[in-house]
Amino acid sequence: MAQAEFDSQAFRQALGSFTTGVTIITATAPDGTPVGLTANSFNSVSLDPPMVLWSLAKTSLSVTAFSEAEHWNVHVLSQHQQELSNKFAAKGEDKFNDTNLEAGISSAPLIADCSARFQCRNMVTHDGGDHLIFIGEVLGFDHQALPPLVFQQGQYAMTARKPWAAVNLSSEPTAPQCSYNEDLLGYLLGRSHFQMLYRMRKVLDEQALEDSHFFALSVLNIQQNLSLEQLNTHLDYTGHSVNLEDMAFLEKQDLICQKSEDNYQLTTAGRETSLHHIAQAKVIEEELITELGAGDVMALKLLLKRLIHQTDPGLPDLWSTEDKSA
Image 1 (tube, rainbow, N blue to C red):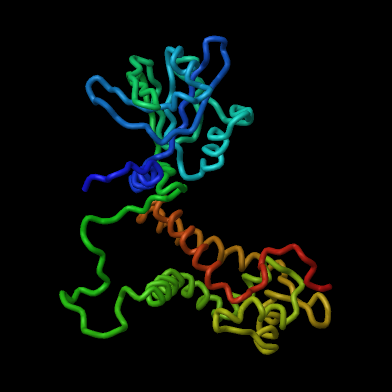
Image 2 (cartoon, rainbow, N blue to C red):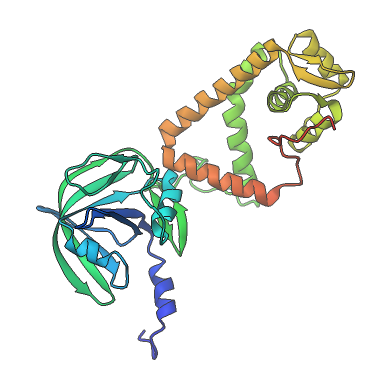
């Protein structure tokens, strides 16, 4: 439906519905000065010959440098390069200071550790309203399996692959009509948690350790010299707790010792046992990354951190350096 009056702000918001990758474009000005900026206007033009394009606002201070440059490079940023994106989006900053560069085909700066890079010859520039459209011939490119950084609705985002077919946990074509179904978030979080810990629990069984013992050792691996009360403050949300009998069992196994009358810490054997648990957890995580992909796992971690912040009942900071004995 045509609009009676064109709303530029609404138009910008509508364009923001189109998720794009985040790139850094670099070149070398005629005087030898490196120039670079963050852009999300990058797109492909042709496969044969290989050509790409991007656009730059006519008001940009870099218009002259890019217009006169013979070559420019496009860097498709990976998820861990968000700070680099912010750096090259800012004005008046030494953008190439501490930026990891590599040798390229031309004198245009070539940034390392990107999802993909395209080294281009500047072919032609077209007028595009309030922007200039740069079209370049790709002289060389490379890419690596790093999940890309993306931009959507005015903020950074992360990609998670969506299978072509629906993912259903039940093999039944029609699920029973009940309010408790497989899309309940609590069920999905709980089941995934316990399934991930299933193999970990086998290790614990071999060591005759209960879940509460595992949790206690994990906390003491991070925070030494805790009282029983302080230890349980970190465990309450799990539905588990430890008592004097549990601590006596761990002492008998030479996994913990009392630093003072009321405070506990790991022994050398206890720390080795806890590190073994962490190693096993990392093996499980690496297998998940192999199956799900690094990008999906990174997106999952970010969502879980946001969920934890949202539902935090006020747990003490496990990684705080504050003296717990004070």
